Length: 242
Image 1 (cartoon, rainbow, N blue to C red):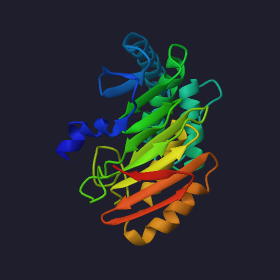
Image 2: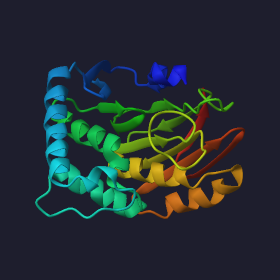
Image 3: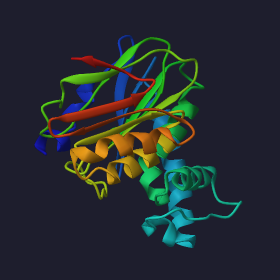
Image 4: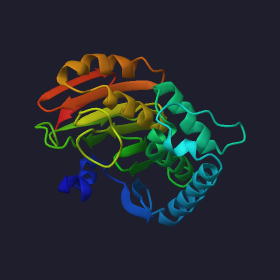
C-alpha cells in the first residue's frame, strides 16, 4: 500500500522523447507527458472540467452516489454525459468513470499543443502516441506486480488504459482482483469497464467470465486480470516482461 500511495507506479510508464510534469488541484493529481511542458494549459482544463462536474453534482446529487447507471439531461456538460454513457455500457454508476473522463478530456485538449500526449490520473490513462510505449502493471502483492507491461503501438487515435483493484487504492470495488486492466477506445469507457470487470472477480475462478464480460462491451479492445498468482488476458493486447 505504501508504494501505491507514493505513486511509484508512475515510473512504470515508459515514453521516451516526451517531457513529463505533474498538475495538482485538490484531490486530483495528474502525471502528464507531452512534447513540451503544458502545465498551465492542463491546469486550466482541469479547473474547467472540475467546475462543470461540481456544478452539475450540486444540481443532481444522486449522480455522485449512484452505483448503477444514472440518466442525465441533454443540457448536462459534455463530460457528465460522456461519463453517464460509459457507465450505462458497463452497468455501473457514473462516478466509476470520473478519473478516466478527466484524463480523456484534458488529454484531448492538450493535443492542440502537442501531437503526443499521455495523461495519467490515479492509474487511469489517456494516451495518444506515435511510437510504441510500455505501461507497467502495478498489482499490489501479486507476484506479477511490476513484472509485466502492456506494449502499446501507435494507432493514429487515442486509447484509454484504466485499472481497477479490489486490494489497493481508494476506489470502490466489490471484487478482489489485484488488477483489472482495460484497454478501450477512450479512457472514460475503460475506467467504467475496469470497475465493472473488477467487481466480478472474487476468486481466480471468475477470471474467464470477467474477461468475456469486458470484451462483450463495444469499444473495449483488450482486458487483463490479475488475482494473486493467477493472470488472464483477452483481446488485442500485447504483454511483455519488464
